[in-house]
Amino acid sequence: MPPSCAPNRSRTSSTDRPPLIGAGILTPLPGSGDNGAVPNPRDPRADPAAQRPEHCPCLSGERYSVCCGPLHAGVTPAPTAERLMRSRYSAFAIGDADYLLDTWHPSTRPAHFDLDDSIRWTRLDIERTEKGGPFDSAGLVEFTAYCRKGGVRSAQHEVSRFTRVAQRWYYLDAEG
Ligand SMILES: [Zn+2]
Image 1 (cartoon, rainbow, N blue to C red):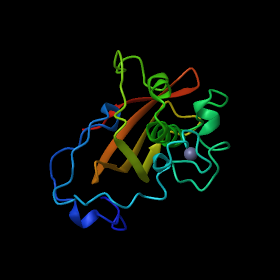
Image 2: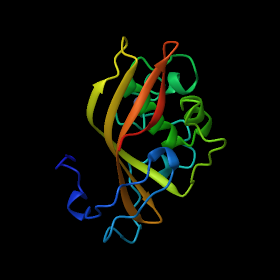
Image 3: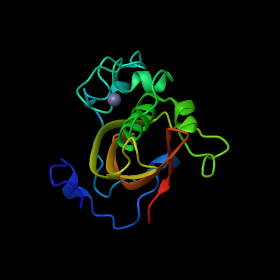
């Protein structure tokens, strides 16, 4: 069940299965258009110089340099599936395609992957996690990611599956 606190939840009327966040493809929500004149101040891409933002795009409340930054830099592997999910969302937000590929399991990883620079990721809600802990070999993370493209708000809801190989977590695919 999606969160009732989502600001544009009432506008979410599509019953189609949303595209995978990993595919970088978005379906605009019907009736979700606006004039796009007001940038979202929480959006790191509102400032073109903020490729390495001060506040982490995953909205953990931590600084990027101590949250998803060390994961993106390869300094620290994600200890849990949820941390990997958050860091992958942050990688979408700052445009780090290499990290997305590096954390994609080889069995499902695309040969190449281009991020859509016109998409601005604005919010991540982690709704449910199942297993995915430091001693598990598999995990699920259910989330909704919000974004804007050309002044149109979109949301992607997905149950992502993760697998742990040689003590590293990888994104596998979406359930369903
Ligand atoms: Zn983070």
